[in-house]
Length: 102
Image (cartoon, rainbow, N blue to C red; front, side, top):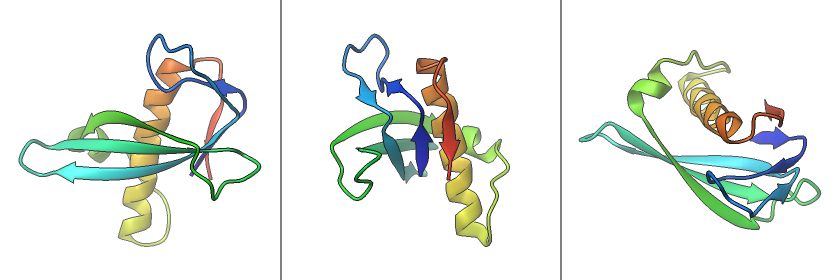
C-alpha cells in the first residue's frame, strides 16, 4: 500500500483531487506485450478497507524489473517493485506530495 500526505491527482491535468488517500496497487501483466496495467484502488486514510475510486496507470515489465524490490519472498519483492514504479509515476503527477510505501 502507498500512503500520501496531501491532495493527490491520478491523471495529468485533472481537477479531481483526493485528500491524503491510501493507494492499493493491483498489477495485471500482459506477457505478449510486456505491458503492466496498474489499477490503483484509492481509499480514504481513515477507512483503508473501503475503495472510493479507481485509477489506472500503464507501465512495462522492463520498468518493474529495473527496481530492486524488498521484502520476504519473491512475491513480496515483486509487489514492492510494482509499488515503487507506481510511486514514481504518481510523484511525476504530484511533485509536492510525499508517497510512502508501507
